Amino acid sequence: MPNALSSNIDKYLPYLNELMPRFGINTQLRCQHFIAQVALESGELRYNTEIASGKAYDTGRLAVALGNTPAADGDGQKYKGRGLIQLTGTANYRKFNDYIRTTLKEDIDVLAHPEKVAEPRLAVMTACWFFWKSGCLALADKDDVRAVTKRVNGGYNGLERRTLYLQRARKEKLV
Image (cartoon, rainbow, N blue to C red; front, side, top):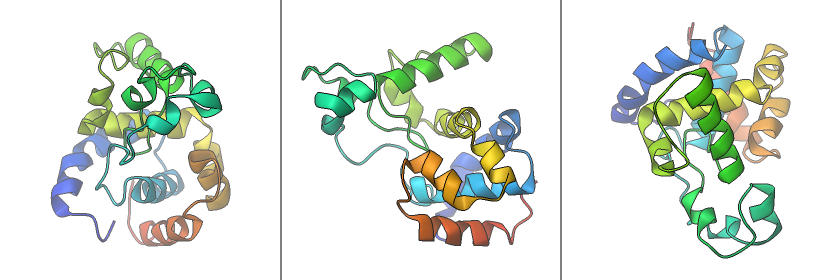
């Protein structure tokens, strides 16, 4: 990530090195695609928390789709996007929480403390977990940046920049 601040790289690199292989992000293609998506989603490691308030996820159909209540009770703000690939909504926080507590045996409760997902290790872990659980590994194996982008973003937002990041990542030995 050429424009990422070295202090941000230093903050996340140990966790990227620890966690990427643990979640099967362990080949050149998988690493390249993962780094390209993280670069775009995090603004080159500048953001690990959604800039917006999360109010858009507090009521209505979007709130319900994310596992939040349709009532104006603050769960949209509480479970707003966090992590290098943003974990958003009560349902996603619950799935991640169940995974880390039962499978990884980590003594962390992100449902009770969602702000912890913005901490560097969990910011990386949620991104790796999402990339793994959502089928991005197989899409990366096919070298399909468009399909990986659709899976990560829900659309093709920033596809040109993601492709540029992928081209840059191809120049590096990542594994």
